[in-house]
Length: 198
Image (cartoon, rainbow, N blue to C red; front, side, top):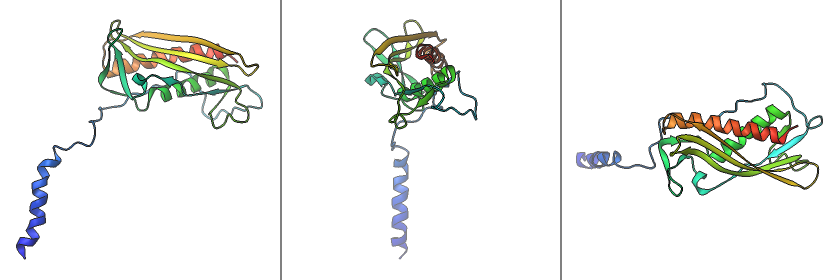
């Protein structure tokens, strides 16, 4: 009787050392990076499409290098690496789209619509491709490049423009890269908002 009750306990003890060796995923970094808009609407302010222009901002397309939560480093014209222990809280395309929405709403007064809200009247439409959202190792700069495509409400003409911001960083490490990319992204978003206008 005692032998039977001891067998399960002994089996669990034998497996205990293995649990320390098994990993079900990469170890998460100590903290996650995000970006925040330097221009935001005041809390409680109401916007209405009845009185102001609207715009639909789409999540930009990205290359495979940016289709991840890791922070890329362009080490040469043909080589790409990622910063160790640096990870965005969500993919860069979504972070940048949210930053654009906040900045355009605050700086232009337009009502920014989501794709699901835009079926009745999308207003102007802003889309594009996020080309860079990382660090250039050769110049120690955070680089954000956005190729914007804007279709204004009046007419079917598409305007295209490239926006780029470069911000020097002290070191290629998570904290400095996050701060630099945040600053560069805000600069690009402000220039896009000026392009969109009222």
